[in-house]
Image (tube, rainbow, N blue to C red; front, side, top):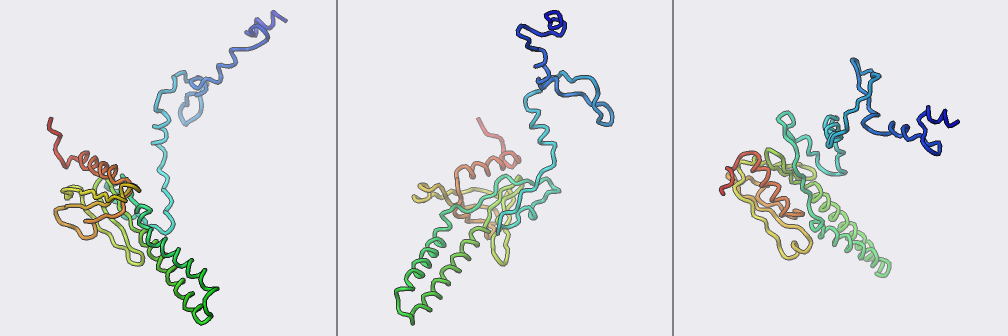
Length: 234
């Protein structure tokens, strides 16, 4: 028995340490010949750092699902020119304050219906329904208002029944003023004021922007990398 274990390469206690070598990643990969058929020779090249990222980059891009009720931003991109989205800015939740207050008011009116006179119950129901519909319309209007930053331009898409779009190329951006009121600093939002060469309507004031400082820096990086500004002095 000992002789057979020695010939099989077994160690003390009958364990076979050499069998563990098959679990090494550099030996588990096999070289492929022509036509994609696996060959018999093992590829002993070790896995390098970042190989999984390169493989992921070679995969076809998966189209992101369109958000429920939101605008289709992808149809406005110049994909044949290499335009990609850097950031898509949605309104901060503070923009939905008025619709939320209207919903609470509608609930309060409905709770008041059983205790009022029956002649006023119908009027109260109509008032609650009107508040709920107005709140839903306002929330949908805020939800469909998007500010998009790409590697070529910035544009805004908004509107519920009629979609409006305002575009500003990066080279027209002269200055960006970030306004952060007191409650905006507390809850983490601000407003953008764009100073451009043409003063495009619809892009001068962008309100309720979450993380305004980080997004202002993102726009500055895109402008800097596009070569529209000279190198830093010093």
